[in-house]
Length: 165
Image (cartoon, rainbow, N blue to C red):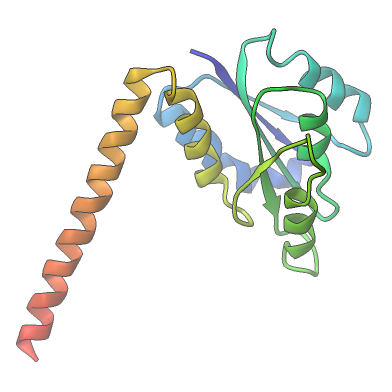
């Protein structure tokens, strides 16, 4: 199975990305976590990304706040999918990071999840890997079925409350 890299621009982003790491581990996806900066260690980020495919990675998740150029820098140096997590870390409540992450030039795609949306970034990475992994695909099918059952149970509980009024 291909690995997923979770790269954060600062160690202060760890509380956000820890949800992605936990989700990936729950699905049995091998994961590596690193701190790299698009601005302070650009050569290291470019080197990691340019060798990601040959090093067994199938997806890169990049979390960054403020200027949030990390996902774009990583995507510029690889052809494997990059998922950006804009991190709420400034006075603009993460809007600056969201706009920086989602506004990529043609030819440098970055899939972008919600501000602090690490769990969805991990699930999107799992979905990408599941395209060629039937076991992962089955786990995702179970997740969808469990979510559906949960909503149906909640609806039934609400109906009981409504009938008691």
